[in-house]
Length: 302
Picture 1 (cartoon, helix red, strand yellow):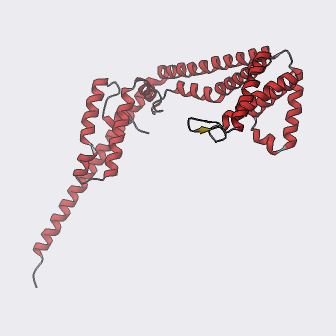
Picture 2 (cartoon, rainbow, N blue to C red; picture 1 turned 120 degrees about the vertical axis):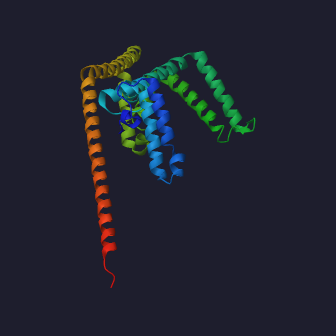
C-alpha cells in the first residue's frame, strides 16, 4: 500500500499536468538504468520505479484517485461497483440465466419433436447417419467412425432417441427433460456411479413431470421473472456501492485529507530531526578523529 501523493511528492490538490510533470521528473531520477549505473541495488531501483508508475496510474485515473482520496488506499483498476456487478453476475445471474435457458431449450426440443413431419425428418437423418456409419463414409479427410465424426453420430442418435421417447410417451419425455436439468445442477457422474441415487432421481423426475404437466409455460415465465429480479437486484447493489463511496467521500474526504496533511508534517518533522542527529553524530566523529590524531602527534618517541 502506497501514498501516491507522497511517492510523487505532490500536493493533494495537484492537477493532471502537475502529476505528469512529477512523474517525468521522478521516473528520470529513479530510472533503473540510471540507478544501476551509479552502483545501487537493481531490485530496489525496480521497486521504486514500479512504485512511481503505480502512483501515476492511480492519480491520472479519476475513479481510482477518488477511491484513494476517500479511503487512503488503492483498490485496483476495476471500480468497486463493477466488482460487485461481476460477483453478482458470476455467482447468481449467470447460473440462473443459464438454467432458465436450458429449461426453455429442453421444452422447445420436446415440443418441436412432437410434430410428426419434423420427427420423420429427424428419423430420416438418423437413418442416413447410420448408413454413413456402416460404410465408414469419408468427407474432407474425416471419417464417420473417427474421433472427429463421433460427435455427429452421437448427436444423431440422441435426436432419434428424443423423437422416439416423445412419440412413445409424452410423460417419459418430460421426465427425461427434468432428469437432464437435474444433471445440470448435480454432477451426472453421481447418478452414474451410484445406481440408487440415479434410480431415485429417475423416479423423482417422473413424479415431478406428472406434477407439472400443463404448467411448463408458467414455469419458464417464473424462471425468466426471477432472472429479471436478480438482474435488477445486482444493478441496484452496484449503484448503491457507487452512491456509498460518493457519500463517504463527501462526509469524510476532508477529514482524511487533514489527517494525511498532519501525518506528512509529522513525517517531515521526524525526518528533520533524524537529519539533525546525523549531522551531530558526524560532528562528534570529526572531533573525535581530530582528538585522536592530535594525541598521536604528541605521543613521545622512545
